[in-house]
Length: 385
Image 1: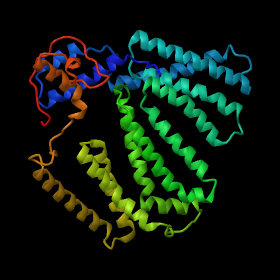
Image 2 (image 1 turned 45 degrees about the vertical axis):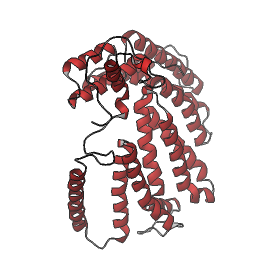
Image 3 (image 1 turned 180 degrees about the horizontal axis):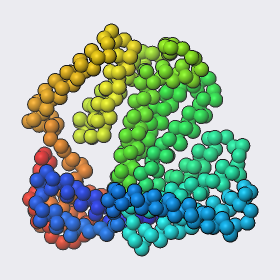
Image 4 (image 1 turned 90 degrees about the vertical axis):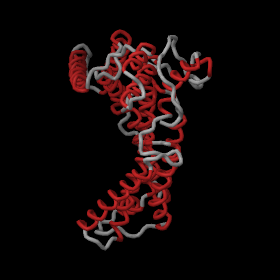
C-alpha cells in the first residue's frame, strides 16, 4: 500500500536520529552531525510533546464541532440510517483533510494528523455497530481489522499495531471459548499466535514501520510468555471455569507450564544476547522477574519483606558482577551500549567516504537502501565500538 508520509524523509529522519546517537557517544563531531543533516534532509513538522498534545486536543474538539455542524444539514440523524450516513460523510471529510494537511503542511505524527486518523476510523466503524446490531462479536472485530490494518499500513500510527494485536487475540479467544476443548487449548493458541506475529514483525525491514514493528515485537513476546506462565494459566483457568475459590485448583499439564515459566525467559535472554537484541533481552529479564514471582506465590516459605530484601541484594550483586565481567567485551557482549544493526545505514555512509565511493557503488548500504549524493567527512570504524 502507498504510504502517506514522504518515505525518503522518514528514512532521512531515521539516519539523523542515529547520527545524534553517535554524537552523544562521541563517535561523531558536531560538524559531522551537521553534514549528516545536510546529506539527509527532512522537512516534517514535528512539534514538541506538549504542543503535540495541545494540537491533538484541539483537533479532537474541531472534529466534534464539525460533526455537530454537519448534522444540521442531514435529515433525520436520529435514525440508524441517517446517523450512519452522517458518519460515513464525516469519515470521508476527515480523510480528505488528513491527506491535504500531510501534503501541504508536512505533518508527521504531529497530533493533528493522529486525531484526524482516529476520528476517521471511529466514524467508519459507527455504521457497522448501528446497522448490524445482532452480529457476533468476532464479526465486529474482523471488520475493525479490515479498517485498521490498511490505515496502519498507510499512516504507520503507533496505536495501530496495538489495536490489531488486541483484536486478533480477542477473535481467537472468543472463538475458542465456545468449545470445551478450545478452553483447554487456549494457552497454546495464544503462544502459537504470538510466535507467528513475532516472526512476521521481524521479517519487516522497512524503516517506515520501525516503531510499529518494535511495538508488535514487545507485545508478541509478552503474550507468548504470559500464555505459558503457570500463574496466569492457573488463575485464568479458575476464572473461566467460574470457580470462586481462594486458591485456584491445579491445572492439567502443570509440569509443562513449569517448564514454560522458566524456559521462555531464559530463551529470551540467551537469544537477546546472541543477537544483540535489546527488546529480547529486556523482555526476558522482566519475564524472568515475573517467573520468580510466580514461584514465590506458590512455593515460597519467606515473608514478603524477607523476599524483597533477598531479591534486592541478589539483583545488586549480580548486576555488579556482570558489569565488571563485561567491562572487557567477551563473546561479542559488552556492558557498553551497542546499536551496530540499527546504525548500519549511517555506518555505510562513513565507510563509503573513506573508500572514496558512494554506498550504493560498494554495496555497503544493503539491499533496497538508496542515499543521496554529496561528501561526508568523518572517521571510519570497525564493527565493535
